Each structure stands twice: as C-alpha cells, then as structure tokens.
Length: 293
Image (cartoon, rainbow, N blue to C red; front, side, top):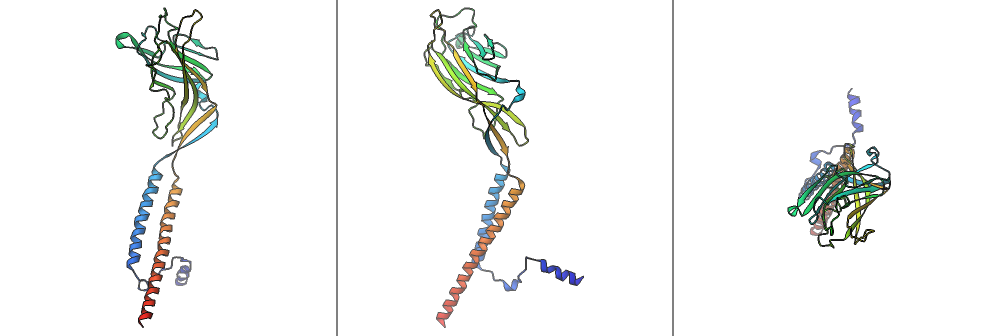
C-alpha cells in the first residue's frame, strides 16, 4: 500500500515548491493585486453578458403564420377634425374579390370639436393578398359638398403587438402622421409594403407581427360626375421576405470556458511579467555588486 501511494505521486503535474525556496517581493505583490482586480472586472463583464439575452435576426422566404387562415389583423386609429362622424366610413377591398363598404364591426367613432370632427378607431382583418382599405364618405347616405380629409394618424399596426425594447422596428410607421395643413379636398395615398415578422423568446414561443414601409402622395380626385370625392387610401402589398428575431443566451459551458481562460491567461501573463522583472532586478543587483567589488 505505501508503494502504491508513493507511486501515485508520479501522476501529480502540480508539483509543490517548499515555502523556504520561494521569495516574496513587493513587485510580485503589486502584480498579484492588479491581477485580482483585472480578473474581477473581466468576470463581472462576462457574468453580465451571460445573464443578459441578445436578439439575433435573420431573413428567409416563407409565410410564418400558416395558422392564421390567410388573414392579418389590422388596428387603425385616425382623427379627422373637420369631418362629421356620420360621414366617416371604412371601405375594404382586395384582389380576392372582397369589396366591403362601410365596415362597422369592432369599430368606434368618437366626436371631436363639438361634433364637427371625428376620431375613428377600428380593428379588422385583411386577406394576405394585395388590396386596400380607405377612410372616406362613400358609405354616407348623402355625400357632402366639400368633405375635408385633413387628418392625423395615431396608429396603424398589423398583427400582434410586440412590446420588446431591444427590437426597434417599423411596426407603427404611420403613427403620428399629420396632414392637418394639407389641401382639405385632396385624397391621400399611403402605399404600404408589409413585411411579416416573427419574434421567438427563450422558451421557444413565437409571436407574429408585421412591419411595413410607407410612401405617400397627395392629389385631387374627381368622380365621373366631376365632383371631388376625396379619401384616405391605404394600399398594401405583402413582402415574401420574413424577418425573424430570436432571443438567445450564452451557453453555460461557454461562460465557464471563458472564465477559465481569463483566470489562467491572466495569471500566466502576470507570472511571465513578474519573472522578467525579478530576473532583470537580480541581474542589475549583480552588476552593481560587481562594480563595487
């Protein structure tokens, strides 16, 4: 048994140096303190990065929300301060043959300016094909002589609302659009390119939303009778490209590996520096002793 125990020491790669063969120095103490502070700083930095999540985005061609039945939820909130609520209506049409005038489901009209204006809030669905929806007086029983289409768009969003601070997307690109100083009789065309967007959290749960880009133009439109019938048009088309945001966290093994590399690397470099300084110091002492002798 003593032989086996003593032979087992042959496998020890961490040989111990007796204390009486070591020599402490002020330089070594200073370097050791710097090493500990440096290691602590890097450790806290890596720990912060390990705890925090990062958002990785990618692009691919596909329809991400196949369970939606080919529908997209739309939320619209717009104010027309100079048009009575009885005249305001929402019309929806697309290339699948849908043509709905005066959509009223899940919508609300709030009088403004003592009844002279109107705020329209509505939630509805559109098909995943090119089309348009527009705010106009087309559904009114009697058309006004000079309908005023100056407006402010508070919100236009598609799909599920994403409340993620790290994702800065164009989910409500028209929010805050102000056309109060435009020609009251002008029609407004907002041309939208809708981009499907997927957000996947750490648990693997996916949420589906849509970003969009917008271009707009303003013009005066005449009917076949020569009357001016302005409207606010939102013409949309869908992009085949899907944007996906994925939450990710650094794996534990990578964190441990990084910490080991920091500790080992710091002490190794510090040991080399301390050894060089000590060797140079001893050599200088020998030179000085040689001169004195």
